Length: 169
Image 1 (cartoon, rainbow, N blue to C red):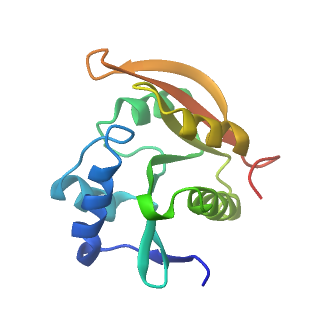
Image 2: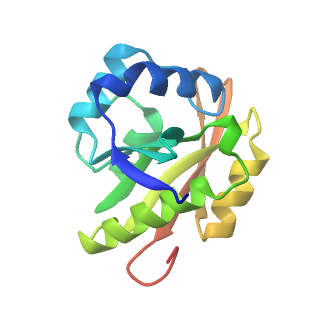
């Protein structure tokens, strides 16, 4: 069976929150309030399923939102016309099966359709997340800067992929 994109909603919160927690520290821990904010504010709040099983989840935000993430705020200050990938998570049982690439292909396609010029995200350098960094660099993301967050206990690589002239197809 093939992967299928579906809109996520309130009935998905328990499963999405559980998946999110399984991906900490590569993503920040969130609760019901944060996931409800994403559901209401995100440009894309979607899940990918295979045989009705959750394979992955993504939250993508456009510029100009009131959102406390230091990384999102950095992109808001430095760039315009972007799609910020706040979190992309793959269920452990679906890792190394192309779920993240499938989601990035989907996001790149619809972002180009809506004339968004770039995808932006961050990947942890401290604590390290080498698999994610390799995936992003392999997809064509480039590092714009690094930033320390959470009182210096984390450091991230701030990445961008230009969409209007190259990138994931």
